[in-house]
Image (cartoon, rainbow, N blue to C red):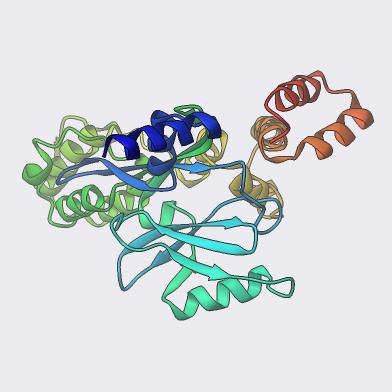
Length: 318
């Protein structure tokens, strides 16, 4: 036993590895549950980024959703294999797809479709994400954090539908407004009594929608319901979302629509185009390869590109 331990220690030294680094390698490329309660599920994963390759249009990760399994998964590409990691079911086996030169994204998507997984953005399934480049115990990784708000959304939707704020009275977790605002407004328009609107106002306050009731007035023995409505209309609501929360791809798609120009003012359009340019630059800085950045810097001499190039060179160009 002693000889075996000495041999293992010698192998670690000769290979330049340490027990700590070996353990770190075993901890990456896995999904962990950070927090889980009746309102929110929070997941985190560190994926080794030195081996990641683009899947399509420079994207190194894509989300897929399985409606039957109620599972969100993330697709990654390494060398000649694609890996689908389940996020909502971390204990599940990783789905591995071996590819060749003739394998393209269309074939991968078709294969995953047969497994019940389809491409998705996160808003339709009431989830948010945070993705960034991080070092995990010395390993260069892609940090992916997902927050699943489905349970909380269901609570608020039920409270709104039944005009009863009691079920969300003790809820402390914040629900992103964009997941519920449209539904709330539709139900509020259908409310037929002061009691119903009073309950909806309580829910709105809890959500941070700020719909406040003013004093009721009497006219010809009839109650007139007067409310101050501070919820943005569809036009302003869309502008606020695309100006603060939308991803680059969402904003890029929105700005490309001809109808958008009919709904926004000149100043609003200018603000969105400014944010679009900032998001595009950030996307280039964090997704382009070293060679691509060098080519771009030669063309426009952007100092931010130079700074990123120097950083990547120090990191070994990975």
